[in-house]
Amino acid sequence: MADVPTVMRTCPPLGSTPVPPLNAITMATLDAARLLMESGGKAKSVDELVHLIAHGLGAESAELRIGYASLSLTISIGHSSITRMKKVGLIGVNQQLEQGLWHLAKRGSHERLEVEQVEEQLARLALATPRYGAWVTAVGVGLACAAFGRLLGVDLKGSVPVFLAATVGQIIRQLAVKFGLNVFICTGLVSSVASLLTSMGGRLAGSGTIGTAVIASVLLLVPGVPAVNALNDILEGYPTLGSARAITVMMTLVFIAAGLWIGPILLELWH
Image 1 (cartoon, helix red, strand yellow):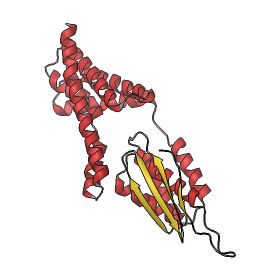
Image 2: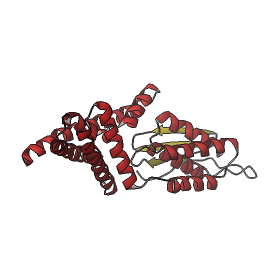
Image 3: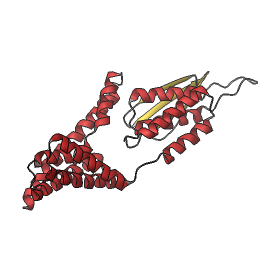
Image 4: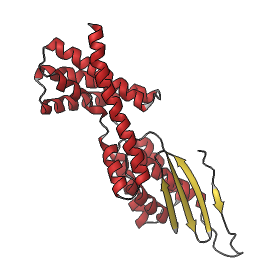
């Protein structure tokens, strides 16, 4: 939805203290909330962050409505109030950005910051928070899946295919996100490719634990943080958002399972 403000304002009498920039305060606070949502924050954390930043900027009241794909915030100072909305983008996990946002919020609650300072810090956090390169991430994911495979009982002959398949799967996922492919289609595609490559590699290597290796190769797709957040949101009084996240988790698991089913079928057709 477009960011169209709904303003309710009472003009102050002549000579009174001017009304603070409600629109700027609201948009800066919403930007912080959006970044925390996109970093994998749970609903209660987003609500607490909003109150810290809004009150640090001079707001007397901050009422936040949290949806799965949008945020709505009403800021009030005296007899003036304004409501704005903001779209939430693709949700991932970024602990370093989350910590930076909390540091900014706590700093603002102890020392009065100007709106321009908060906006500048938010822009810096969004752009300058360091990320690992695509290849480093892909190799790390491959090693993690191979390690989990060993914990699950995958033999050494099956661990190498798991590593290669998970690495390729992560590269495919990065490319799919870059080109805007539907997240569920992406999940099914990565699951199919990873299970196909693992099955093929396991047979060629003579592994005796191909079934377990196939499962290990798609562990990169398991939505662990969204699942925990969904449960936390429901228990902490945000049932609408928690239910939406839970449905997303279930749909992700369905497409993972579909990929695990399709991969071996493609291998049999290949032979």
